[in-house]
Image (tube, rainbow, N blue to C red; front, top):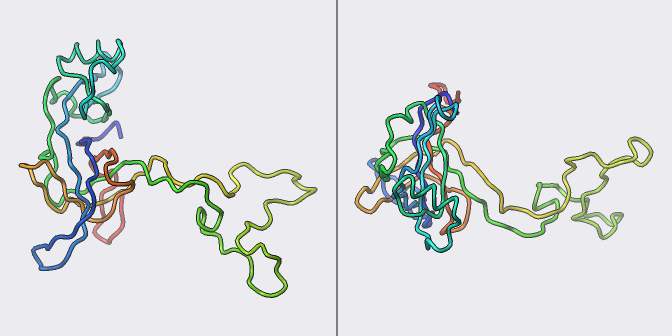
Amino acid sequence: MGTRKQKGILGEKLGMTQVWDAANKLVPVTVVKAGPCVVTQVRTPERDGYDAVQLGFGTVDPRKVNKPETGHFDKAGVPPRRYLVELRTTDASTYEVGQEVTAEVFEAGALVDVVSTSKGKGFAGVMKRHGFSGLGAGHGVQRKHRSPGSIGACATPARVFKGQKMAGRMGGVRTTTMGLKVHSVDAEKGMLLIKGAIPGPNGTLVLVRSAAKAPLAGGGVV
């Protein structure tokens, strides 16, 4: 990711709707209130060892910001922001501290990856969490139809391997949906309409960035 040019913006997921495209087909889209973000730092190979741009998003009461962060924002000459994200990009030198980044950074038809936090489902069993089939429903099966079954042999290896799929907390984790298409951009309202669904409940923080994988002519990705 550090050896390519990429764009990105922080925003808020507002929800889903559907719109008509040029071919008169109904397209499901997710509405993202993108930005405005502000550049709070530009990293250079000479000083930091790599190229990157740091973006700030969202308002926050200055009294709730600690002193190191306050000094960071003061140095940039911008009010404190609630969220910060860093994008590694080869064209970081084209950004300036204090510069505003809006939804216009993307254009209709662009491919993007969307990073957000998925919905928390609480404690879930293996069928819901991992897609297990469960045990049989015949008369010979005990009342354990949704149980995981065997989790390992007793004598060899006489332990449960790490990573064994078992019941536990589901969701509420950082999730990236790749290769989505920007259906349209409303620059006046700062909205991005992204075709398809993105993880997380309405109101969650999302990062929209340039797609890491480009599509091939045959339908694959590279």
